[in-house]
Image (cartoon, rainbow, N blue to C red; front, side):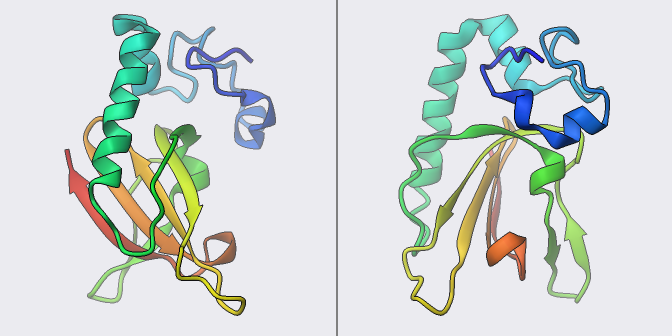
Length: 150
């Protein structure tokens, strides 16, 4: 499978199991919906996409979330892999993402970890929002740190 953004889709078990043909063949619609990254590149060139990504990284780093190291890169991620169920104040658990969307994201280890507790920050974004979550190994015990419209 060939991607438009340069992502390595060969290791994506979700795509393989769901007959994904890749975004190059589907013109940026690998899971049926238009991927905002592919659309950005197809309409504005790769350089404009890289500038957008840099601006997004700067926005995330300017949030100065305690314990979260500076983000250096964001990677295309399928919603299926990152759509955690976050507990809300009313006790309900809610998934905020779409499994069939592509997001830009990264995972970084919390700077406050000690040898007994390992927590990570999950950073996800698209053109409309930034989401920061914190969770344990394998996404256990997720906590929504921030959801911000852009």
